[in-house]
Picture 1: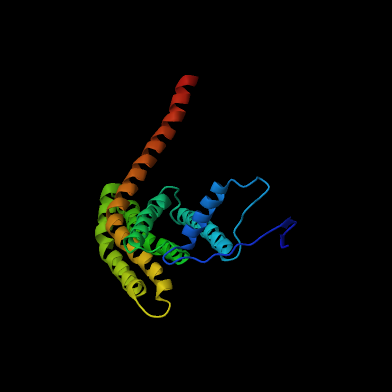
Picture 2: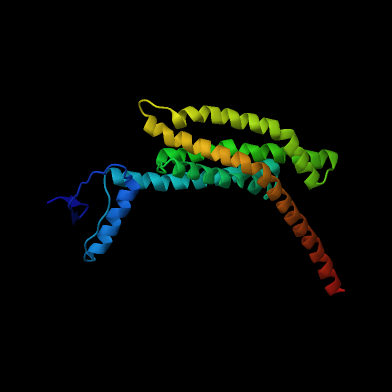
Length: 239
């Protein structure tokens, strides 16, 4: 009898039917195991390829969260602010939604390769917000413009560079998304995720980034006003 650790174990192998992903098969097996009502001393777990797949999914989620935390820290140090990095990272939501919608529309599963495409989008998409916010902050500090006028001028100045870099990235991802040949099934989810994320984020970030920028600026002004009012109120109570 085979053993796993100190326990007797039995291995059941299975093959994936056509058009069924590893995640769907794993979920179906877990549902079937729960319906069996096995005794508490009987345990089931995945081994082999299924176990590696689950480990890779957990590792990908940790990698995604770690990349966001690192970017927030770096942007916070760069701009000496805790709010502007959030404005930049807000562009990632539209990129992720665009990638998922593209995969759903073309009936592709969200594989590990598609997840790598989403991570690549993090570096590509956030440059739109960086370009606009960097110019807006410079205009506020050097020319004394109001935040609304500064972000409006930044959008006008950086529209052409943003479009040029996005079109260049799209041109590089289109062959991956719609190419054929050996290994195309591995490259296509990567290209589709990049193309979908770039298209949606390009349309939305030109509008959402100025809105988020102005919202956080008003929040900063209110917080500073409340902080200044607090010592004055304390001094009046003491008097």
